[in-house]
Length: 164
Image (cartoon, rainbow, N blue to C red; front, side, top):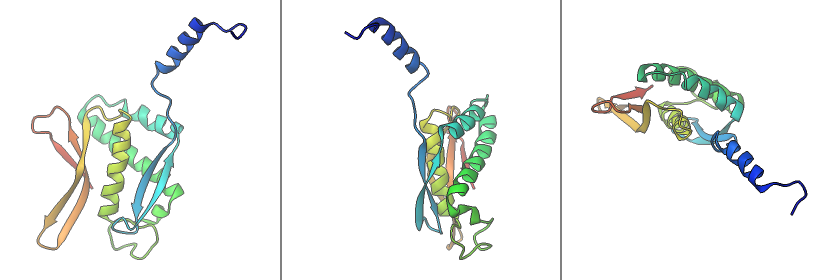
């Protein structure tokens, strides 16, 4: 027996520590870029960064509020990823940055955004929405677009929100 060690006290301390949920490490999320997910690299988000976005998301008191906050949070996650990866070279549209290393098309955005949303969902931060598979829309025969999708929980028919 270790002098001064009290098993009952150690159990209380362990239980108190676990009451706040499991201890988590930084998250790494693969981010696609260079069109068509040609290149993938890990973006790392620290627990401090994730605590910041968690505090924002947990303020949502409705699905509408959560969607607005999710849009802001995704922007912040992309900014942090852009500090680590060349995706900060990306510009609006698919042709304004053609040929630059780190640019993203709708396939890159849909894939990366879905992965970021899945990370938030796995952490229990999406209370009013679930992440659906990527959607592909086809207009005419050659124009297609891919987007990440959130589905509102508990809504009859599951209202779907495609994220550009």
